[in-house]
Every structure is written in structure tokens, then in C-alpha cells.
Image (cartoon, rainbow over all chains, first blue to last red; front, top):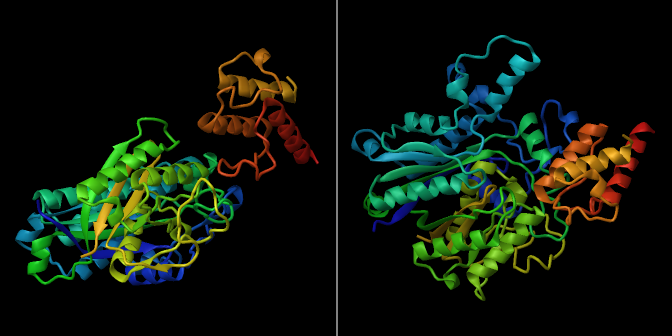
Length: 400
Length: 86
């Protein structure tokens, strides 16, 4: 079976506009959650989030491009450009035919839906912009990445709520491993931090009003974020032959469904996904020193996830941290953003902390790397994503 | 219907029971009102009484809205309505 190298990474999220600034923030334990700046904020109960600030779309894209690029697509394109530049790849000629892209998103062009509804329902307009459909479609980011880089092989978007980008990276990994493609861009993009997006989440009563404190006894829910991250996955020998810097190896992928409740997670389904990823990667629990948790900061997730980690790892418990405490829950893009923390652990030996942690919870008896990053020699790690609807996707990475 | 009857009717609808069968000391758990059904009940209460219910599923004790029993929910809604009128 072919091996799969990560040869590029890019991101836009509340912690930073690229990978170096994001890793710096993760290392420093900096929290990007703050007061939201949104229209009609006074009509929201929840007024915090991890927003990408100072995003000047007009300075980044032409007017014609903006007619087609929802905020989520914009994030994806900027992240993709950084990832491809780092990989040092050009897709002209034959390579483009053997290259593709899989993106994950939960809500697609949510802001475009919302603005269009507002125009016709609230403002009483009789028409919306003619390019609304290609702008809001969930697959828009994958399409524009394919066009921007000339990726002419498999290209599509997957949607599994908060596991979307782990499913995307997992599928792209499978394609490179099997030989269906030689290079795949993979990741996720999400821009649901709008009045309607927050309003919808508010109703579920799972959002915190002050901070995201995963695994802390004082946790009070999740905090929404936004952004994108894109990785370049490349067949190992190809990457080696051209002298590319290999950032890490994607070694395994496990996916399961709880087949239980639409919102309540099951420890059994999550543990099965982690065991599946370990087995697929040929790793023993003792080989894995770090797990980037789903760690939303809700009572239900954190309790189930800790039980699942104990179930999958037994006595060989790894370090566990939730970087959502810093970049927020990036919904369908969150797994891709969190892979950056995995790359940091594998390459730099620094495990990103769980910030905002205040007090131990007997339901979470793990070393959650509270508040300060930790040096540790990490040769392999897992990244968890457990979505509403009981859809679980876990990636296993190995140091290059 | 008075406030109590309206709250009981909302909970009874979620529990798929006759309102006459609900007693104040019954827990929402024994009525099968948990997770999504609880969230839907609180939404129905907010809409019916034009109040905002301070209840967070991850920190149920934090918000001064005791959702443990039928009686505690009625009392909490009475307080919210009184506070709104004040």
C-alpha cells in the first residue's frame, strides 16, 4: 500500500491568517474567543465567538470574484494558496490530472443564504443576485480550489456536520493511498458566525456565554468559530523523489456511526472510531502520545469522549487537549484546523494546551494539558471529530 | 388557562400524556423529557410567555431555572413572567 505524506498546510482562522501565526498562538495558549461583531447583536443571547477579524474581502478578491465567493470559499482559497505554496507544487500538465480536492463543510455558503433571505423577506426585494446558487452551494469551495490550482481529478465536498473535514481528509488520504490520485488537497471551510448561524445554535442551548472550557468542571458549552484549513496530501515516494519537505504522514483513518441519538454522543461509537484509526495505521495505543480531542466543552461531549479515550487506550493514556478552547469550534472545518496542532506536536514536540481550564472533573480523569503548552516527544497522534448525528471520524498521523 | 395550566400543557404535549396525569413532584426525566424534548419544551415556554429561559444544557444549575420537576418549571416560569412585568 502507498504511504501518504503531508507536504503543505494552510489556514485562516481566528488565531491567525496563516499556519505560522496559528502555531505561534497555539504554542502560547492564546485564546481568540472574544465579543462578536455582528449586525443585530442585541437580539442574540450569545455574544462571544472566535471570529476572523479584520478580514478585508475587497482587498483580497476582485469584485467579480466576490460575486462568486462566499466568506467560507474565501477562507478556503486563502488557506489553499498557502498550502500549495508550501508544498511547492504546480499542477500544469500531467499532475493536474492525477490531483484533486476534497473539502468538508457543515453549512456551505451559509452567509449567502442568509443575506439572500434577508433581501427578499425582510427588505421586500423581488430578486436576489443572479449568482446566489453557485455562491452558496456547499461544494463551491472545492470547485474554486480545483479551478485555482488546475486540479482535474476527483473533486467534491463532504458534509458530516462537525466531522466534515476529518471525513474529507480521510477520504483524500484513502484516494492517495489506493492510487486513485497522487496529490489531494483536503480540509474544510466554514463561515457560520452570522446572526442566523448563532441564532440557530443558540436554540440548542449548547453555547457558552463566557468562555470555552473543555474538560473543566466549570465548562458551560461550546463557542463557535470560523475559518478554513487545507492540507496537501501527496504520495510518499513522489514527495521524497522531488525533495519535498514532509511535514507528517497520514497513517490511518477510522470512521463509525453511533446509530443512536441525533445530538447525544455515544462513547462506544467514538471509541470504535479511534480503535479503527489505530488499527488502520498499524499503531498500538502505547505508540500514540497525543490526542487532539473533539473537546467541544459541552457536558455531553466531554464526558463521552473521555470515556471513549479510556476505552480505546486502556492503561496507555495519551496527553489530550482541545484547541477549540482557543480557535473556537470551527464546525465543519474544525478537524482540519486541529490537524495543525497535530503537525506542531509531531514536528516541534509541543502539545497545544486546553486553555480556560479551571478545575478537574471526575468524569474527565485525563491529562488535558491545562492552560500551558507542554513539550513532549510525539511520534504519533490522533485527531478526533465526533459530529451531531453520531458520525465519527478519527485520523492517525505519524511523524515524518 | 392560567400560567400553571399552560406550562403543564406544554410539558404534557412533549411527554405525550394527558395534562391531568402530570403532578408537581414528577421529574422531567421520568416524563421522558430530556435532551431534545427539553430544549423543545423550553422553546415552547419562551414563545408562549415571551420570556427568555436562562437554561444551558452543559450547566443546568447555573442559570436560575430549575428544570428538574414539573413544579420547579412552573415556579421558574412564574418568576420569569413576574420579572418581565416588573
